[in-house]
View 1: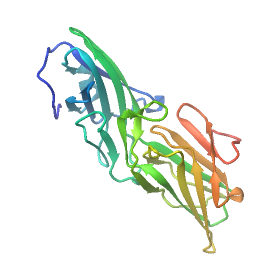
View 2: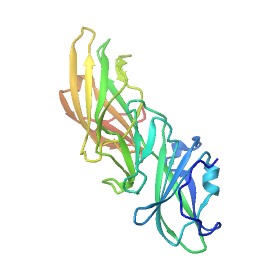
View 3: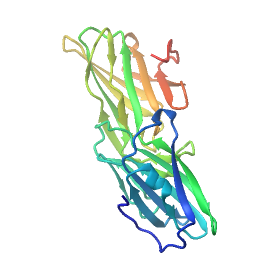
View 4: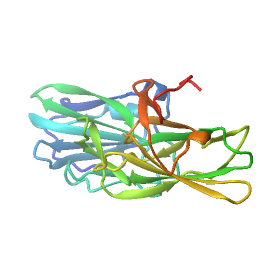
Length: 277
């Protein structure tokens, strides 16, 4: 079902721009698409088409009639609460936000492409969908029996601007509005403290590092606080902070180890014995 449209009068009904959705991360293959938004902007940033669909097939079958020229095409899928989009008037102002930063919702995805439309042709535009949120897990080995951990990310963004590029020249720059995101409190089990995987917005766009706060409450009521300076988190990244309780300090800087295109482990000394556990 086509829900909304905001576009120019059709130039033709059999040529223009059409969209082919795919998955950037193979782990997302087979994920259900419950809704899809498509925005098309002229090269000067003006919005000329905005549509919403309920299936991947509807997106693929629709042809957006446009005049010859250069365009930016943006899509986002499954933007349900607590996600929202705003300021779509120009591509530079378009923002995708997370209204409730600590909810760890199911993933929503986005993609951006630059397209040159030609007269009399249907330009099929591949849009590989990338996760909006980062994933974070914290693991502390050798924790005292009965210990609890309350962890927070202190500088997560409240959204991303999909048509602006980040420091790596990738589409999707995080906003500069800083939010604190609390992870669920956890208890020691078998000498370990392991947080559930948390889905959250990436690190704010103007930051050099991610900052985390770890507060340990021991069984006798004693508190121990550690501040962690870590690499920035990016959209679609999967991050695993691994620490040893015996090596904790009031302030720690951790370094990344790249496990795959999407997965990064953070450690103090740069050594991990088994990155798959």
